[in-house]
Image (cartoon, rainbow over all chains, first blue to last red; front, side, top):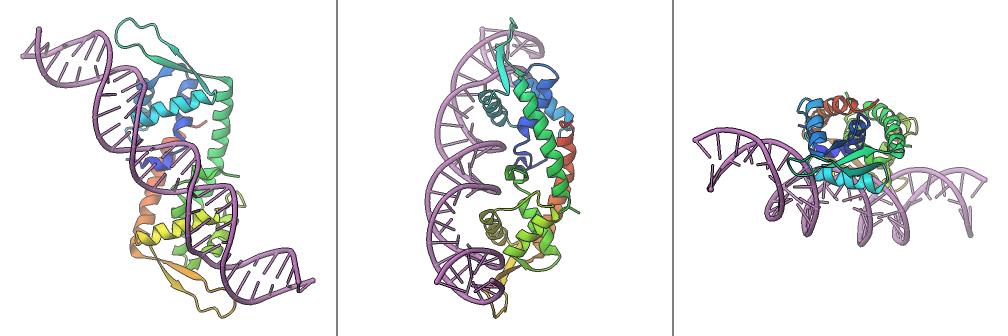
Length: 106
Length: 106
DNA sequence: CTGTCATACTACGTCTGTCATAGTAACTAT
DNA sequence: ATAGTTACTATGACAGACGTAGTATGACAG
């Protein structure tokens, strides 16, 4: 299991990556992160929802309600253009960060 | 320039890497990080010294005084066996973390 | 028809690492 | 003298992650 402090700052990026594929909601995002990481990273619920709030507050995503008739109504999120730009910036930053950190890793 | 929040949790690892090469002190560590990262990452003084304190408190490094006669007396740090073990663990963690994050990066 | 499981959240408070700001201290070069 | 470089310490703020707890709805088994 990965210590979350390491991933700190990249939770938002992971969420934006998944939303770029299409609108989604909490539980699905959470499951996809778990799957894609081969169970190596499981995002905490509170971390996930606070990330949604932060991203929405910053205009990187927008929320809307689904129209499912069964089950509790979900809040869906869609990435905005600003969110896409932010995501791309984070990707560039990641490549630089990775290079720097790897100089100190054996 | 890299935002430090990204590197959060790896400052300690970088410091341990440099101390593994031999005992050193604040200013030198700071300069080496700057050099090795090609000026892409410059650790803040407060971050550096608080990392030293944390690492020493955890038994990963030990401090001792240099015997320089000119200039203010320096506090040197040496990595411990426990610190070496911790560093290696962080390296293993890094490789896993990197793989996970890269699944979400274009 | 009752309890458990899965889904889908919200609220609240704590912890930790980073950072801004400010100050102390000693030597070195102009 | 005074600026510059080295070498720190103190204090408090901030943000993201996390622990704990609670609410709400439906599906399915016994």
